[in-house]
Image 1: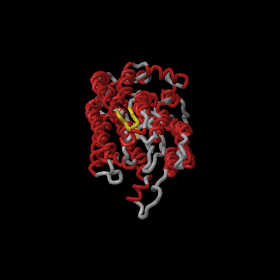
Image 2: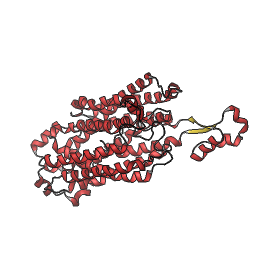
Image 3: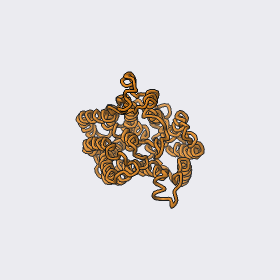
Image 4: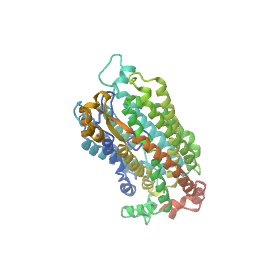
Length: 499
């Protein structure tokens, strides 16, 4: 189960087949998104890098307790989550409590993530470190397949009644509480085997401990040095803004499909063909992303991703006319069409993701690898602000009005016709109670898509030039500690591995 970012799918399990689990408009999603924005990982990563018990191991010191707590937390959530999400038709979910609990769980997974990222840089030979991105991408994709798409399908009573159950039932094969319980046990079991059978490779601990700039007292000075490296700042500027090129497509598309009446289990099925790409493409492009210039793949894929985002928006626009009056018998060509578009979008997206992760791994200083990988995943920080803002802003720029059927127009005052913009629950209720219908006059989703594309064209020309320069830098220009211990032979090897 992948609890990390994955910005590639719209993480919205907020609607069921019959009624929404999370009532409200897009703004309600923002509060849950905030827990991802609070990227305190960068302040925590230096501590994870510098504090450890020798007898346990530098990375296992953090990995074992965090995974144990994650496992027990999931078992606890399995007992409470149905009530918190609102198991009655008239009961609203406790958003504040849900956010608080999952924020705690996120802190644990963030710590685990830092330890694993740092461990990967020393577990692999230096010449193979670029393949860490391939491992990361395939693992995350498999996690999303199990934890998102797989769960939504097995939780859907309609899907299970159609394909699994011999007799109709009122619920799916798996509930959310059962799902959490299973993965809680899985976390605990995995942690047990790691503790017993996996040993850390030697990292020249004596040299590490004797380094003048390494230790708990130097943790944040090290972070400050990293932040002030000019290539890091340039890279941060690029990856903080890239998501603004396709954010409406990434974050709002599934919400629009739900608005148009497409069941969420059907939306989950849209992503199944793309998982073929997500599981195989990182391996197929690893020859290029693990080479000297991994970001060349990134900028070859970007224009294609931008074009496909427009195609997806066009398909969303056509959805109402295709499915009108056919929600229980949606044409097969509709599903086939959107699956094909998502398939090609994922080719571009996963190529970019594998390339930037490979570049991160190549330029990270292995002595403080957890901090580097956390900091250079800056797209998870800036990108989350952009995505959260886009969810909120789409409501702001959407223009609505209260529409009254012509046969009732004489019974409605002109004030009601002109002043009701259906912008909040009160106005929506007033419109409906007066016999009207809230309709969208200008959809903010399409305005955002248009802005994203225009921004993406200018962003591409600007970022490509900077990345070209960064790829030509020697790898030692990115280091803060390892420069002081690189031997002549190691330096020759690093020149060959220059990104």
